[in-house]
Length: 295
Image 1 (tube, rainbow, N blue to C red):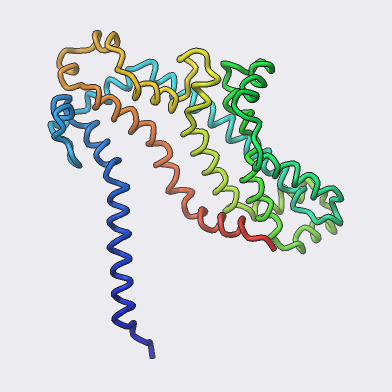
Image 2: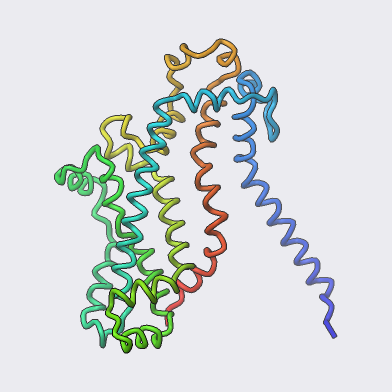
């Protein structure tokens, strides 16, 4: 017979649901309002009449943004950064985590290398030495300045390392008995079994590269090389370039304002991650839990 929940238990669960629902709505409200402002007319947005629903619905802000060469150029820089940066990060994480997941009996200096990487979490070289290094190596004002400094995220390496250590050792031993070497064991055994962990770390990498804005401002000498988030940071802190508006149709100009343009660009900037996350979310909890538990 199933035991019925007590009144106090039901009250506790109801209170939790109410509090969490209010917190979720509070987190969603700024996003919903931003989307509503982007679809509203400039007059409605400037007067502060927009809350969660568009007023005087229009797509003119998005039409302007899609014709804005600076915005589209920044999008391409971010896409290039993600394609190169995520590929390099995932490759480096796998190649580092695999040998470090072995026991000391199989990899004698494993502990030394683990501390070599862990010390970078505890201590940082600092902004100025990092900038001077980027400049001395000729990476300044190139996309590689946004990729190479973060090519080895040690926190993600630790998660993947522990994920590898939780895989049954009998599988790798069987692969070696069948004549497989380390490379074949890694790509044929470890990688296929580590899909949840790799998907979680890929999500971390995507979000990290897409949302990063400070390094673009520091390492890029010209705004034409800014990634999308660095570009959005600059337009949030300053007014729109009115010279680009002067060539547009008068009817479109009448429905534009500084708020609608900024909201449209920020919304488009957040859209790729919002589209990717649902496909990787099912791996997220499993990858975090398994990768954070050490035997």
